[in-house]
Amino acid sequence: MIGEHSSKQYDNELEAIRSKVLLMGGIVETQFLDAMTCFRIDNEARADRVIREDSAVNQLEVSLDDACSHLIVRRQPAANDLRTIMATIKVITDLERIGDEATKIARTSKSLHSRGAGLVNHYEMVRSIASSASDMLHDALDAFARNDDKQALQLIAQDAVIDHEFRSIMRNLITFMMEDPRTISAALDTLWVAKAIERIGDHAKNIAEYVIYVVEGKDIRHMTTPAGPDPEPERA
Image (cartoon, rainbow, N blue to C red; front, side):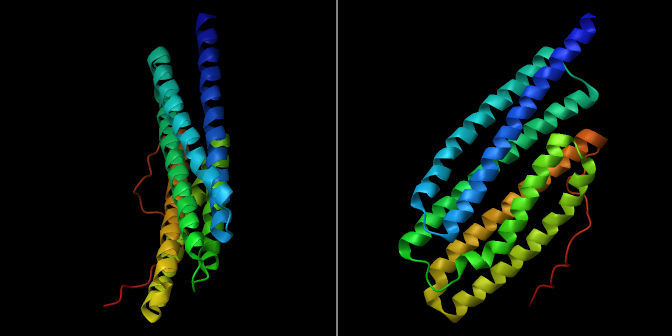
């Protein structure tokens, strides 16, 4: 009975942590969506709110890391229980970094709109990759909530598509800057945003990999996975 009681207490504590991680995920997901809205239209108040929310995300990271550490010390979990906690700590780190990237987008948006959008259709350049990354982040959080390794595995291949889109955006922006120097300022801002979006896709992929680690006990990081479109050959 004592063992059963202890196990239930551990499960309750772990579930409380997971709930807060999902709350953190919801915050950074909203941060990203709001940041992209600011990039599309000039909304300084919303951009400032995204930037302020980064402090709340940072505080959540600290408190959740502390809760996970205390849970390990008190309960001394083993096997799958330990994998779950270690993976959760890594998910927390990735979520905090997604919040950082959303904050970068908000800051860049303020800078771009304060100078005028220039000659580059900045939002249309990144609209597709932003939609892909947003969907990927949402699905990664859903897979984490349900420990769905099959959904997680599908997500990992999507990151290659986002990487391919980023390379295409970069080439187009370089072409714009070479053909018309007046586009350089807006093109660079757009490139920084595209890179931040690509990084958000990377972090969402990491979350999916941690789900697989928890469910299957396999660490598939850095392994070759089925990719999207083949990368174009480098030009001489």
